[in-house]
Length: 302
Image (cartoon, rainbow, N blue to C red; front, side, top):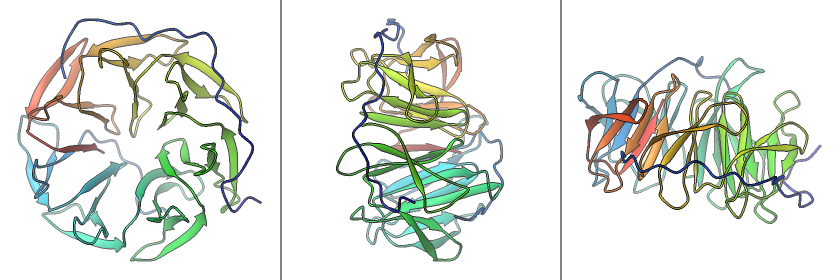
């Protein structure tokens, strides 16, 4: 049983490099809740003083809290960190009511737990020494560590080793056990149907195929984006244009131009923050985006 994230260095499999097609079009553990389909977006105001919610109709945003420094969202859960203390808060879903659930963390992740049949919240200690699972109230149970970063989603919880960069998957059935699934990567993304990794050089996007086997599905790419659905986005490393993975082979669709951030909701709705952060858009179809608000400093979606 591995209690710490250690292992041999195994690089992600990199096959022939097929570029994401370029185009000139421009546009920007405890189960606490059952996963719900949602197209809700969240944003921090430019001065970080307010947290706003957009429910998918028109261009109306409602203030639900603030100030905050970071937002995390997925499967009906919204987390925000206090800019002074670093403490993490969970939105209750009504008005501007939030509950404190813990102290500071380097990062937090929201993932589906197939054993408990719901959604689990995880946090990484500020110094990276431990991975913790929220158990309700302000109680957290250590489930692993040390780790450099956490990645969560429908396919589970993953963490990278701070020394080697290797990536590990949390074993739901045995708890506190981690299985190495691959080597270092520039970026990782977790969707409902799997784990994707970008090679350290950024020349290939690979999908985890079980064990320590990976299959190339695209690349090169700049960054990967995922959310509470099967959707996967990648940006072109040169133009910054954003592409959506078809889910088959190495077929990607160009859907828009560069953006400061992209977020995907549980229903698969894609939101983009303009490069200047002065506007928020929602993807409609093809390469068409609808303006829904802005400006904003940070986006999240649930």
